[in-house]
Length: 279
Image 1 (cartoon, rainbow, N blue to C red):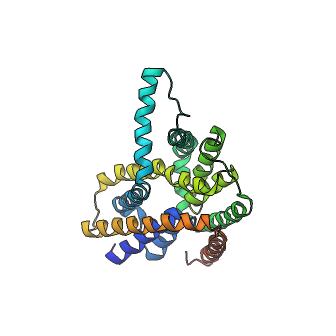
Image 2: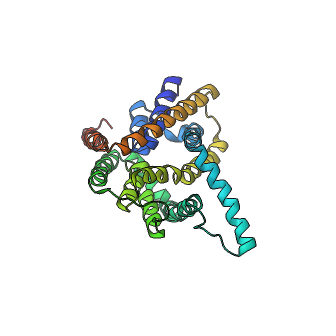
Image 3: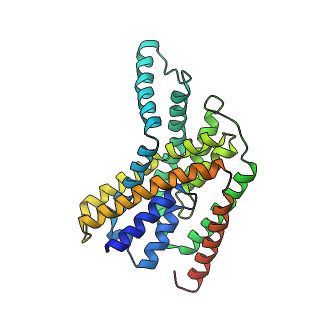
């Protein structure tokens, strides 16, 4: 893999991880078109995930720092007052909801991960999933008019959003899109729906990166130069940071319809190209 391919894949990973168009689907398509075998670039792929993870930490550094402070505060309250006191403030309650949302995502990912990995080579599945992503985005745009804040958000809401995120294991289903849709359908106000979608993405992105890194370390760079790896990671980081800021504005301005049109068109193109044998 050369530097240009690394830049392209880093750009695709960073942008599509946080824009509601599916990073897994776009990476599968790009790798297929460029003739890159994912099994040969495991270390590189793992660093892309870590690059996008870093962009979330930078974009939401204040929120994440506050969540960690409340985590320690919750355990302190457990020892001193025999309770986590999850309703003590909005930040602590939000952190509790993030933990709840991670439960269905983790369970489904652990149980069905091997099955979903086999779908990455099936371009028709990716195309159909992209069309599904566009459809749910359109529905969320039309019906997502909730006003719930942290205190109004319920455990069932967080669990439902976690289920939506777990569906994104399928290549072509957007993680940010599905969690955003889950939040809007649960009645969250738009700023909270966006923030919750990005903050709850931290555990699965970190898990994906660490799991890939575990296998990648045994294989090593496998011929990919360290400079190429660093270049891809940096591109993923900066493009991810841009995508997060852009996504916040898009959702606030209620302009998801553009992504619906894009994913419908991209999905249809992938299906056609897979039928005629190009993909």
